[in-house]
Image (cartoon, rainbow, N blue to C red; front, side, top):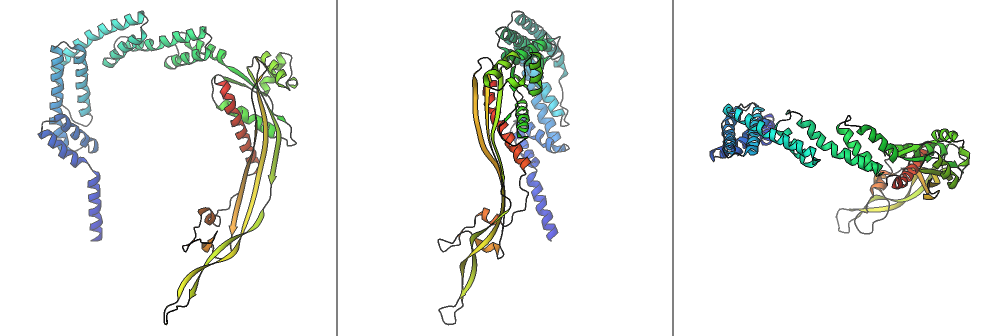
Length: 453
């Protein structure tokens, strides 16, 4: 009986999840009321769920046939009224509906007598539209030309070179605007225009070359000087320098050209200059200008302190709940159980590591030799772990005494400190990596205010 009961429940559940019966009922009701569109839609949805539903296929054959016939009637009406564009769209709607029913296995009766009528209408209409579109192109009316060629492509994408001309109607105004921006020294705007053109057609005129020209002229050269280390800790300056460059490159700004130390040295040698002379904003700006940079970034570490307290232990106070029997005041009565609390100590073993830093940076304009952005970044990154233990009943421990007759709350953090899975404390290397990423991110956010504008 139990197996049968479970089977029955499963069957009812499956039936409740299968809407085909409900769709069939609604479709039949719509059919009886003469609403063939709604009826056909219900039968179509049944076949999407159950492709071999015989009753739905037969019903869609009837109702869909009525729907298609009405569509053909509308087409015939537009033809008689010489509404050529409406007639063409209506015929295409007939094709689409026929294909829709065909996709679920139902072949509707197609009225082939209308095919030649449609072909004649389509060819005459498209020919006229094509001439109109070409005229718009010749008169530089690109928006109107795009509308016309889009309309032609929707009717017949293979007609002559309508698709190519439609693409030209989109590309040409972008190309011309890019040229205009290039002549006005609006290089970033020009680059964006030519980039759109190239994405659609890499071979369009000389858009690819103009895109590269605009990018070169729009690019902002940013020289990253080696980080000055004013502390006694070695190696951090190199890590930070590498992270700053990586962060700026990852921003993927097409107009930012990051120049690192090796490239700087090579460029300076060509000008008979040296890195050693770039020690203050003014000298760095002058040298940067000579080698074609717009900005120079100078960074210095003034403080870097690493601390590891080692493993420590502390004895902390808590309250353990326990039950106590109180004799009844009533003769022969049962004793009562009450909860009392006693002050206890539990052990907390902990360890903490911290890395404190102070970094100063300056973004110097090579055009004005002025510091356009500067900031002092100071913070600490730390990690600590705690492992609490208690020799008694941990589940009966509470951090504080009750203030009412009800039991005191037991915070989640307090409970979990006795059940923590032991984990490794972040190493000095990991803290260093966190610090470098944080500094580089903060510097990058400030710099892009200038670079992106």
